[in-house]
Length: 358
Image (cartoon, rainbow, N blue to C red; front, side, top):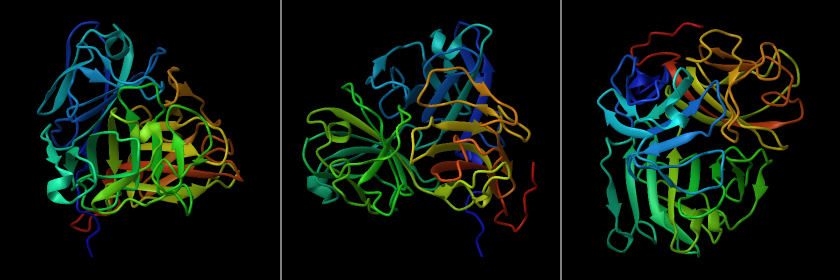
């Protein structure tokens, strides 16, 4: 039995903590493997500022923010370079305020190398797309030009994505999130990354069609398919022992529902779906021991929230996670939640070696 195909998750994902200097700052990762990032998500921890997202498909001078509905902004002083094991930030205050604490989450795609899918030539999809894919880690960055009408787009993962973040780069639109755990009709349901809203039901988002191993579908919704707009999609698929995209129901008490992932988590994104609630993001670098309560919220520019023993508390375990409060952020008793988790270490390695609890 293969427990995992990825023994060292740091080959594909890492979290980096750093203190800003206000001037060009080269940062080196400290994982077991070197990681040259293709998607860098940075947030100031002890000061209010946006979440700043940069990727190598669009280019390092263009950036998005998860907490706003604005499109791309151009700034040469955010992420100025990527290296074989890290990246450099410039003087922009959002990513490098002097003496302030910052966190950067990094994903590896394909080293910045993209492939163009000419739909008319390949017969895959109905419109062209530019793809940077990492099939081993279940992650791809896809860019395309919207048509305003039903279309299919190649994503490059070779398996159906389970979670996708869509952003119109040219217009004031919202971040549309597809997640296969939203409901039995997840092809119609979606949720918004830059808001606290509960899930919504609108067939025009994904043309009421599930993604396949080769394409995802988009309808006439402007946020995913505005005519002539440049649109980006970040696509994710669960990989055994490395990542898990799933859902759970809260139980409403301090001994929260145990959620099995098959690995010790390093990073976790959670959203309540049946009622308004902020997105919750925790990681093992900002919260190195249980109970974990250092929380950032992708829908907000607020500082890191710390609430030991309160509504933001959660434990990372050797094979999953468990909320440690009855509050609505993670564990309301009558609520459903979706999540995306990435591993620190698989529960059992490919050699059959188990990991330990925290």
